[in-house]
Image 1 (cartoon, rainbow, N blue to C red):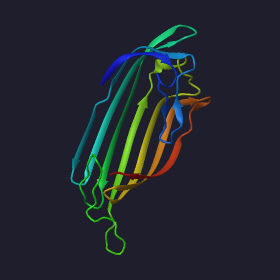
Image 2: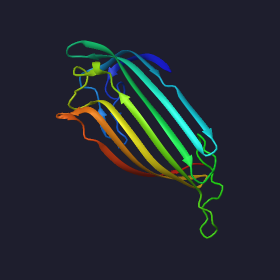
Image 3: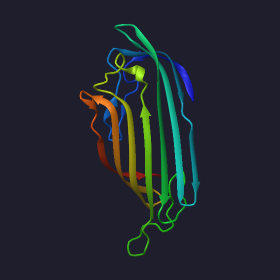
Image 4: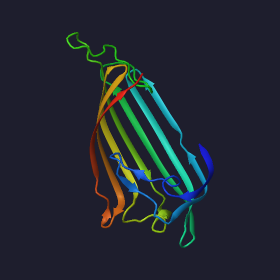
Length: 193
């Protein structure tokens, strides 16, 4: 949790929210500035037992804002949560720090590393009071939901290869109503030492 006083406009002072595919689906209008107390609260919990893991997170962000041309003010309260589950298909122990394969990848020697199936669901709810004075309802969504399915491969303890499919849907954010759903496929290589 944190609290403080913020004064100023632009991305350094007010957030833009992005979809899993990194598309901005919420941003404040150009004449809006942070003008007062900003309080964040973000509890997180996780549980791992053998090859199974669950992680949950809740986020609440309250920010006082002002629309500089009209002097309109509000204290906006945005909320989000996510729940992630994982299952190590090859039987290794799941953990917050990743998976250490019992049989690292070794071509011709029978080692294939560890494979992990993951799923995530999350929602973001933007305060309705943000519209239309502080954010445009035809350009910024009032709510976003996203789910992801993925397969992680740990060839060694220092390398993780990921493949994820993510689907995001939005309430509002387009001139004709709801912003179009986003469907993305990601791959990533992650090295750690």
